Image 1 (cartoon, helix red, strand yellow):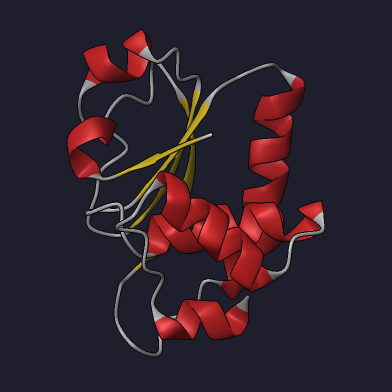
Image 2 (cartoon, helix red, strand yellow):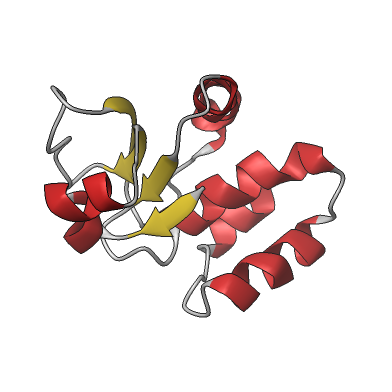
Length: 124
């Protein structure tokens, strides 16, 4: 499971180098750059107060689980790789038995700029 922003999501060579097979795009303002090369889940969330990510939780987890069953590699991204992508990764980690705060600490240890919007944290 990889997390990032638009720069890596739009760099086909970087995706191929990391052997990415599936892409979770949580940003309404980002395109699905290579639909012919990678399987996409489109989250279409904004990074504004009041936007909800909860409607995606179940499908998001199913998409990543499906990629995992296929031995795929998943990039979860938003525009900057800070808020929406972080919340999506936390959503995926939630069923693993980690508390939300433990999962956030784990994520920040690996991606220090991870900072999910408070609305998304509340939904999680």
